[in-house]
Figure (cartoon, rainbow, N blue to C red):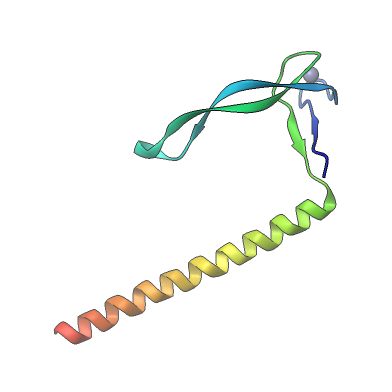
Length: 89
Ligand SMILES: [Zn+2]
């Protein structure tokens, strides 16, 4: 599938890739990483990824699946500690 990008500043669809530093993670886990970033050919602004409808749908589905997964994880942790407490009291 071909990826498409658009400049948020001038709306241009022409871009090139360059290595740019990207910060990943949160708090103490933050790491700088060099990644290929699409830059606008006209003004050098970082171009935004344009998602097709298909991709948007799959993203929504993934997000829903993740939410469900974390729900189960929380419930599992809660049950685990409840059982521990019951067992050791
Ligand atoms: Zn631009």
